[in-house]
Image (spheres, rainbow over the protein chains, first blue to last red):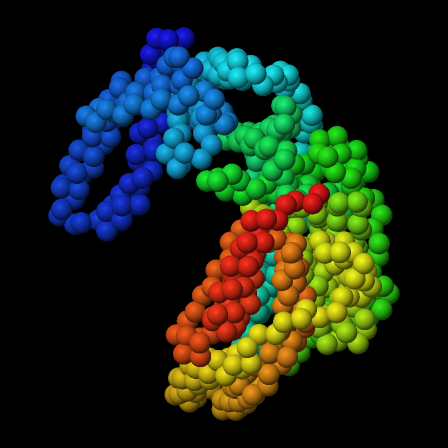
Amino acid sequence: MFEPKRLHPVAMLVKMVKSIKEIIAALIVLVVSNFGHFRFLLIVGIAIGAIFIIISSILHWLKFTYRLEENEFRVEQGVFLKKNRYVPFERIQSINISAGIIQRLFGVVNLKIETAGGMGEAEIELSAISKEEADRIQRIIKEQKNQIQEESAVPTDLQEEKLLYKINLKELLITAATSGGLGVALSIVAFLSQFDEIIPYEKIFEQLEWITHASLTVIVFACLLGLLLAWVLSFIGVLLKYGDFTIREESDQIIISRGILEKKQFTIPIDRIQAIKISENLLRQPLGYAAVHIETAGGRDEKDIETVLFPLIRKSQLKEKIESILDVTIQQQLNPIPKRALYRLWLQDFLLGLIVIVPLCLFLKPWGYLSLLLIPISFILGYGQYKDSGWLINGNELTLSCRFINKTTVVLEKKRIQSLKIKQSYFQRRRKLVSVEANFISGSLGNDVTVDNLDQNDGAKIYHWFSRREKNVL
Amino acid sequence: MRSEPKNRISPKAVVVWRISASLISFMMLIIFIAASIFIWKFNWPKWIIFILAAVWLLYTICSIFFFPKIRLKVWRYEVHEQELDLQHGLFSVKRVLVPMVRVQHVDTTQGPLLRKYHLATVTISTAATVHEIPALEMEEADQLRDYISKLVREAKEDV
């Protein structure tokens, strides 16, 4: 336990790859610019650089040692400049084990030790150690930490890690097959827009001779092939990303790990969870599936993150599964928005559609008329937006659901809502409708959820529920 | 909904907003002229220029003469022990509640234009959002900032 140890020799390789990664951009520029008769110099330069990287990687490995001693994690490193870093066990906040492609090839892991706060610098990374060694370090630190805590008279019950969920093959395949929903739709749109550019209409009339049925078939075929390719790529991407997805629970945190080629692990303290997001895209909703994300606020120096809790879950199991992990109530039935909102949504979507339709019909005759198909689509979408909007207050929890294209449901605790906004436009006022926006801490771009066109009185109910003033001023 | 928050912002806000709207409008005019020259040179349809001109004119008139007045009329705020109550908006009226326990810091800021008119803006930040009460008299803004800051320190979670 006390003797200083070196990393697994693979660490040299990891270091080399890292160094090459850092200079790769400069390297590419050099090679591409292809100095003509300076080529010899270039080769010499690269050779020197390569030797330097190899030697420095070896030295780095030779001089890097770590040991667990006197309740501290001690690392000594540095070839010319010695750097020692001692981290007391009780300061260690999390130990993350991951494995990149190189590590996986050699069956080793990367171990990262993170401390709370500490100006970002106090962090240790062991880039290659054996899995057993990683387990050993983890065990020792955990035991020692518990001992320290017991000595300071804070008894904690040693809770064992519990497996809560593991993705099965069927779920993984459905996740992969249905995740590209928006991507596929986007690539259709992108392709169609190019279609307009490739075949401007005046030119077609001028050059009708060369537009034969054959070339049109070719274009359509290429289009379908492109879509299929995009879908296959996204399918493989999702398989690699969510393969081996597991959720484990350990005292007050859940540990999510995923990934086939590159393993990723997230440790999430349950009391830092800000919001739960349930999203159903167009492909998954009809099949009765949803995805669940959680928003977590980081500590002082950490980032807020958005993590997938369930890549795919049957809607019928949603309530049971989420509630078994987190302390929330998932509502099956929300309060609807009033019927008069439907006419507003229809009008909005119709007008939005017209912005696309009118110029297309005016300037791109025959083909532009295809855009008229957007009219029925906008009515179907409007109905979906109406049906899938809802709200519910349950004790200290607010559930809001809405749809732009995909349906999103967000469950928020009152104390996690950073601010609440009730909006009413002129047209909404005439129909006695309001929009409700709740803001929360989020790792992704959107930090709010907005539900449009609630009944004015329902909006007031949410407002009063959130207000911390005397409740008698109604 | 509850009755409107009590306090209004300084009526001088209208002047400040008008000046900044004029500046923006002027910049847009320069862009418009550049675009027109471009369109003229490359023999694009001339009606585009007329449409752009009409849009610019409409925007300028609205943003200088009408919008500031409406915004001033709608703007209200009130500070309660447990929360901030704001109301603002132009086309749609927004009513915002910010609980004191969620406020992270309060600042006053002042650009050259506001300084000239002896005004300041109070900025209230939570972990996820930033809210502004624009154009208060400087003394009022400073007092408000200190008062909110005091309430924030005293506020306790109620749930």
